[in-house]
Length: 193
Image (cartoon, rainbow, N blue to C red; front, side):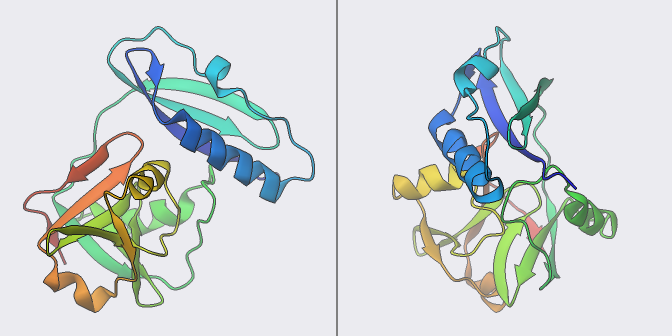
């Protein structure tokens, strides 16, 4: 079966955001999964004249397969379920997101699930996470997927990597999500069970 991946890229008033981080992840993914591949020219692939905030979905394998643009509506997150899953793997941004879809389908009364693997907090299904502790934002050192926006936040020293155990959740003062579309967003009054 052919490996297929995707990138979600924020386009704001026709300008793609974080291209260097997306390009680096695409190149790493192709290099680590294919003996031969075609380098993807993101500048040309993403050119559009759309106004406002648009979500671009670029699908690729060893070459670019498709590009689509969608209106963007942020997901509302108010109630999060902590789930333990030591088998889940998502080291690359696979187009097949069925492991995440299954977790969400099994927990419909929640807006999102916070995945714990081997006792450590990782991610929610759509974003990396961070927790506020003593005026410092901490993000899991071993997320399921190293998101592009997370990488930019680490590079600018806005967040710090830590191993975060599930049992530590109660000590944190606040919770935030981050991805290419929302940037860094503190989730106020979020219930984490």
